Length: 155
Image (cartoon, rainbow, N blue to C red; front, side, top):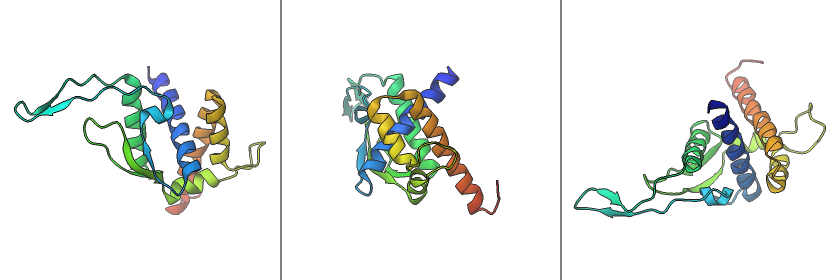
């Protein structure tokens, strides 16, 4: 299960990066259906009961989407307004300076000499999940290396 969650995290992260890279600097409303994930139906809040009634439970895909985007915000790759409890989307999402820097990186160890963001966008459009996971891992690694340089640790 853990390996599957990591794979889905990398796929979702790659798709999120691709969408935000292509729309930069214009913010997007990041939501599951933007990535082809079916969204549950929300219910209505009952003030008498103090809870939401008639809502469908979120799917595992929606939960992983929400936690992946939340992690990307906390790690400083993207900025967005966090959703309400039962909301489907993160409003005004866009790449941060860190996110843009790592997606604009052109790693020397790859055969393609184009920014990682462009490679992710192409992989996302073609549906190449394995390639998207590989590029996403490279992007996140570049972010770690950038963070280490920022605090004065060479690696």
